[in-house]
Length: 110
Image (tube, rainbow, N blue to C red; front, side, top):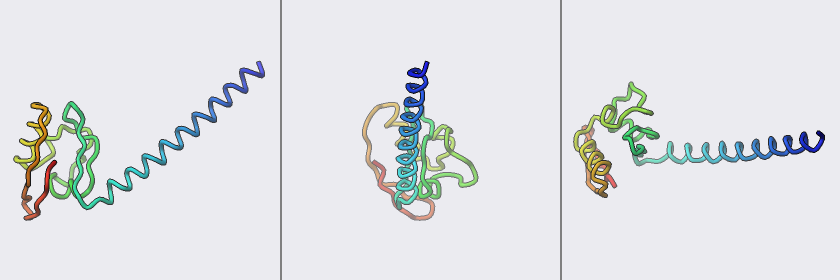
């Protein structure tokens, strides 16, 4: 019984260590993404938004709504960008273009 308890305690400590490392890496990634000057959007294979930083939200979405978990074309208010994303997702093609926002900013989309 004592051996089983020690094994469970060791497993619990290892799990806590791994979880802590994951949280630290996740926090570092969030810090990097949120401090980027360039807009960043990550969507999954189903077209759902998984991550967006503030420059992206400020230039391409309705700022009053949360976009995480939403379908990209429902939250992005830029037809040319939506069309490019649709081509990349459904045609599985790489695409690069320059987009001008309503504010007069230009973005390279890769």
